[in-house]
Length: 499
Ligand code: AMP
Image (cartoon, rainbow, N blue to C red; front, side):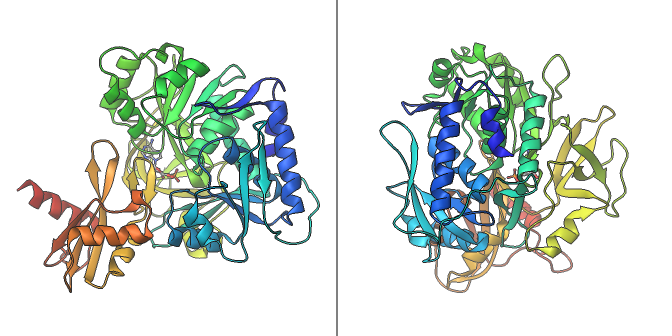
């Protein structure tokens, strides 16, 4: 289980270093801090079976809080950028008994916490140690109890076809398997230094950048957020040997690197790209400009992140492919659940000890997602003769904005709460940097402008989900059978834009 991570390596080696002047802690110090935080949570009345939410920026606080919460009960990291309405939903839906926040700011999260959610502030003390404090308790002190491999360490949400996100419970065994799979794929050792620029409320940053590194006794360097201006100086200063990010981040770095190879790039063993499609041209440009192999991987929350990856050289990395299963079985299934031969497109399906056992409280989604022991990812793709997977599309309805997954139904429903909106259909449009961006078509029954509607969305949706363009139409394009299909609406609008 997760606590074992802190006992794997050399106790004097730096486990976490916060870039930009933050603290650095050794494995020994991190273990001691996490043990102290476990005790505090127990004293605050929290234990096995309790969900402990957290809304913290990247840093030592969120990593130590995650480790402690996943050992005491179940950690439920949330995006600190959520609005009050979103926090209310996620706290209630998760059944959170406590919410860990920074001592200042976080007004939306703080205001959203109902009386039955204990607010805990996480703060660094003068010695650079994370401390929890709270004005109350969640109940009588609980005794400390080490988790079993099948206990749920982490609960996250994924966007579904309805506006309600689905809850994904991940066990200690799921997370540890995935951490091991990632570390084996890239042959990570205690000499590696991972630069974590992905948010730690998502499996990409949590499992690939952080847990896989702790699994091998290496060092995680974490800036409070990704900043292209300081990226290469952090790589140099901390001796980073790899980083993992979404294609949007690689593109931003690429567009800033005019001509010369950035100083620091020579230290990188490899760059990992995951969570959205990496365009072959971006891959080629990065390899040429940075002089580092870039390995595209394929991950998803339900698989505790990694399912496939292109291998390290000298084995072949194939542009446009997400690589081969990384100790995860991958099959391409037809609608009936039968396996398709190489070269044939079907639904990508997976099996393995990293894969979760099912959505929580959602029998319908489970019935649709599991067949013959396979978990159906909702992605479409094909395998080649060497077992490399290429993704070609999605069956599931979601917009992938630079790796952030957005349910279009959630945006439709938000737009429909505006009194002037009669119909709303949200969809993804191509975007140069984000891959996809959110747009919507609406039919009005009253007076409203595009900016009124965007402002309305901002009241209840985090910025990344808000449409950047809203097309006001006389009617929504429908198919011959009278259905609205997001793809058709998007195509009709793009066509009229081109005209
Ligand atoms: P998440 O649960 O947020 O990690 O999102 C998982 C989804 O991200 C997958 O089901 C895919 O649709 C998408 N995804 C992940 N990696 C890639 C990739 N390399 N290329 C294209 N889509 C990807």
